[in-house]
Image (tube, rainbow, N blue to C red; front, side, top):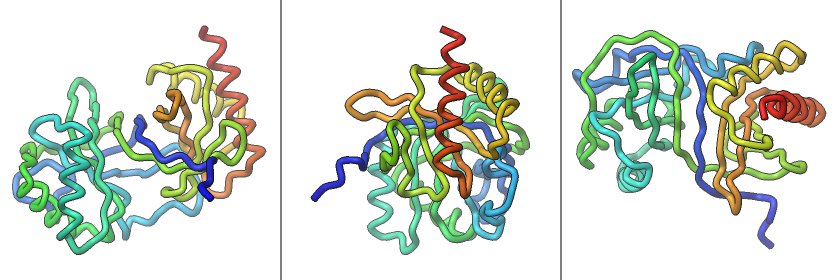
Length: 234
């Protein structure tokens, strides 16, 4: 019997991370960014180690649609001998907006150049290399597989230690930063937060929480605090 509490759908996610140019294991004169500090809001043990890459961002010459990236990635997976995941996105660094393909789920950095060659052979063009070390707001269009574990609280079935809870309405990025800071100042919870929207029968406006070992009680408290603060801005 199908588990009706499991949702498989598309959506969007916005987060801020420290990014820097990746210089090695890439196609010559192409622009690739890596995460300098994964999950910057979370401070503690159990973070993925640097030995295995978390993700890389292939900066493209033009913006490709999410459908185009999914179709190309599907074709590449037919012949590329290693696992990977790819989604379309963009990165905002100060006044620059950089279209990108976020890749993750690969085992080592040496695969990035080979993956780039596959994307290039499928018609994807890459931007020319630039040296960057800065905070960037990353916006991704991605597939979600989540399970509702409590009312309006969800567990990500693909990404370990990742949860979502629904909020009453959509937030702008600046409002999300403001509300998150207030929540942090009034909570002992250790977490990294991101802003999301999940396309179900309704659009679910959500906050993504990364926190290894977080309890249901703490998730409920965070949901209540975000809701309380957000309602002040109506």
